[in-house]
Amino acid sequence: MNDIRTFYIETYHDRFFSRPPAWFTMYLWLELVYHVPLSFWAVGALLRGDPKVPAHLLVFAVQTALTTSTCIADYLSWSGYSNAEKIELGKLYVPYLALSVFMGVDMWTRLIKSIGGPSKAGRSKGD
Image (tube, rainbow, N blue to C red):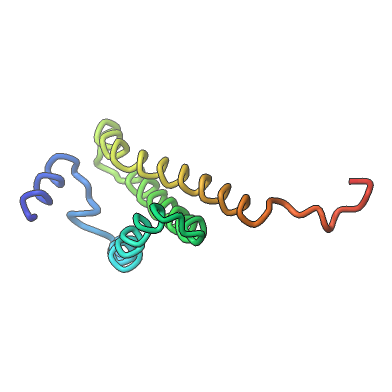
């Protein structure tokens, strides 16, 4: 496992894994405590059509998008890194952000459909 970490750091020069800021360590704990268990649950829940999937995966997607966006904003500000190095990091982080945004939109749509869509109850006749 240490060889993989060393290879990753030497290849991508990802400062998050060589000199992580305090908030990044918290993000790793979120992954361990929240993402990993939820991911195992979600696989089975998706297969059996559990109605709680959209709510849980919407939270998962929003949290993933927020933490990934933070990482992207941070590495784009790193001095001493060339644009080429930042682009290489982007090849890792941006697809993860795109996937989380896609998942969030998908889960939001599923959630809205499951609760009946927008309510017309509060609208007056002129709207």
